[in-house]
Image 1 (cartoon, rainbow over the protein chains, first blue to last red):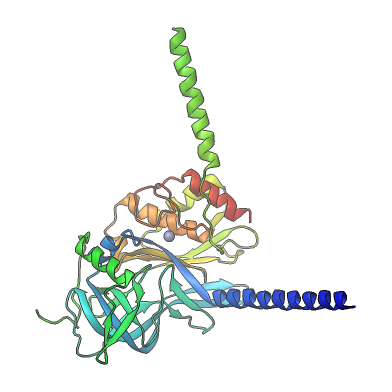
Image 2 (image 1 turned 90 degrees about the horizontal axis):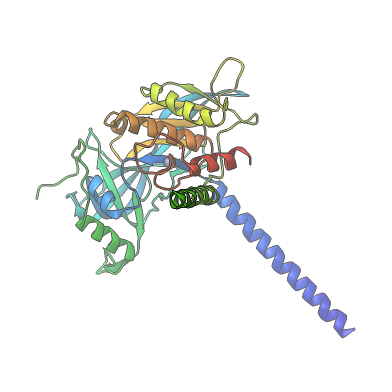
Length: 209
Length: 163
Ligand SMILES: [Zn+2]
């Protein structure tokens, strides 16, 4: 009698455990399904921090303060079984506060706007982002590799163009942890940057030395 | 003379062995998606300044598997639309699983013919379901002048096509 009770308890416990894992697996896969990764090809080695620094116009750490809006670019029409459908690539405008300029000098006193390739799709169903890139979260600190556009705006796009940092608070002011391994790699990459010869623009947020 | 034959045989044998080992050692890299339709075709439409390079890319893949990539016509459903855009950054081109291939004129306009063709062939590779692979492959993520399918590209295409 006792033995069968024990077996019963064990069977029940393992069923609960299996069920828990099934729910967990389901949950992770459904989260993954909501993100669609854009695949590209690149003019530089996007896994080399020296190349990332040398190709970008500005490298800096910044805290994300808000989302300013979504923009839908590169529209094309595609025929489907149910008729013509418009497809676009989402971009997101973020307001950020620069904490530390590493390459170039952008204003740190006021928020600036940076556009990132990626965001919520036009139909609102999925999040679209470049492979190995992240969409920044408000209140968190990131390294940005930014490119000035002809109109003076800033753009950050592609793998590793935005990297999350750990931060610490110093007298109420956010400061990047010097020991942060990503920050170290970024700084080292900048100190050994492989500069790219390409036509460059200047950001409207740049300040004089 | 006999010695020469021996050396030649050893070399030939070694080369054969190396070849077969290379085939077996192919690095297959595919994505979770492809734009191939249920009939295993990739029907493209749209326009680009780099259409001639794109066409060369289509020929490269179709030389390996004939008739898979086709220009969209009245009796087919389009699988991918191609277009151009302009943006200052490191992206040469990209493929989105929603059904689009876009070429960045900022970079493409500065590339050599071989580099343009590489980029077009590479993006078509993504549309066929291939993921990034090693240096020397069409599917290497960084710009190169390679325009010929490597063993890795072929093995990955087989894997994506036959799934
Ligand atoms: Zn790629």
